[in-house]
Length: 131
Image (cartoon, rainbow, N blue to C red; front, side):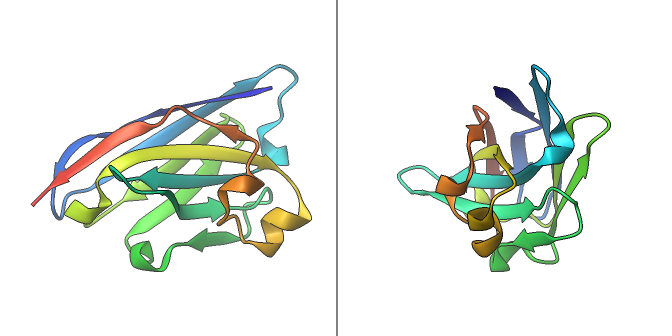
């Protein structure tokens, strides 16, 4: 079993930056075995893909709208996942969730963009961006 806990959300103005963190833990847990991702869910909307990284850290995928502004990184030694968000926009308001997935062909085929390809989810952290 893997536990994920997000932090770093809060209030921001358009154009600001925030850094989200996700702490992973679990019994006999090896974070480096998991692909990871960030999703967000706006009020009344479906949970959507934001960014993902494979278990090697060599391949990172982003939603087109965040490319060049958001950066996903991981520190396997600390069991931590990060999402650096720059030039935030009001439409990026929502609850941000981190997720983890054991290596699978489905995850690679879908580049980590599908919710169903993840086994573990955090409880989310709220990000509110005002105009």
